[in-house]
Length: 199
Image (cartoon, rainbow, N blue to C red; front, side, top):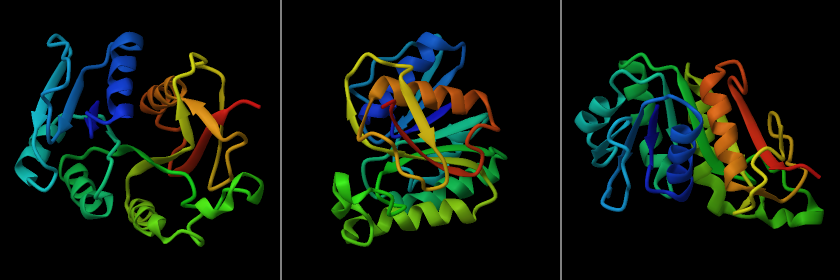
């Protein structure tokens, strides 16, 4: 498992969840890795920028699954990630992005967060389109507002741009879904999911 953007909040939580719930070996990649706490028996770290194709390809070598959880510049970096996955024959991509990129937020919960109303989401939509045009077995996960609730298995997913049922979900639930996606390449295959707490 390769986590790109390992110092993001979801990157760190997902890494811990993999360590606690699976036997997977994890590779962490980020520009600044000094704050990461590493289990040296199962984790390794690559410090560097995705722009550096040499470091990216080294990190990608031998991977089965790639999780991308970036905070910025996704539109500049996604093609490099896809190219590296193709070069290294890695097919499974899990990509975390923002809600609203499918214009799915209902008016009752604030439709101004949709793409048509807020062009700040345009680069995110562009990234989703690039992923969709690739030959990867991808799952895009649109995140709603995250909280630190302890209800790890109290969530539901909707498919293909259908809006989430509720506005919030726990970070632990997102980590649980990521592990499920990583271990089942048919779950969410070439799909765009929303995750939310069960109503």
